[in-house]
Image: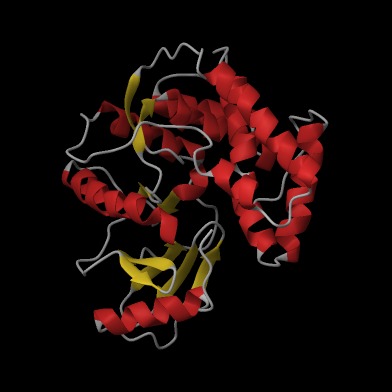
Length: 292
């Protein structure tokens, strides 16, 4: 695992110097798997990612430019030399989309976007095959905060689910998938929703993009919201026998960002990690989780 003495915000500020942008007034927008900062003087967003994500970020920049050209509402990168490598981080620069106060866009907007995405041909970008838990497993293996018993349990459960996943029949077929599609990755301007965070885009089963919204019952998503999502997409996963496998894969996948944050001393992440692990070990599929 790569370490650096420079803070994520410090790395963002150094990238701004390279780009000739003012970092005055830089402020955090979100801290989770990626550190995201707002640059008020450039009306832009700086994303600070892990160095091992460089290839996926390079693909994301090319892919989103192609998707925008296809008419899909997506977050767009700015025309600068990127991604930049800065002291163990990889930095990218994106257009800022101000988010209005009030209720965020419902899951039906994501359903509409995914319907359009899944109708597109394969892009002229060399995308990898979709592989669940590809990024999770090394995080678990190298974690300093996980107890050995927890590490063994997560990896063993991952093995079980991946074995079942490999034998699933996917009625929607294979194609371009976002890879991390859930309502939290949509942005909203009051009338139009757009889809962001394309780092995990791949070629894979289309059902993998739909199941994450169903996993959102962990965060209070209602039956009515799931119905609206399915109606907007045009297909309902509810009765598909593979749904529980995909939602359980997603449950484990969400541990990754909390493990990373707990490893660097984030007490809130450590508490949420402990809570989620406890519910998973007890086989509780309905217990509510905190979003961050």
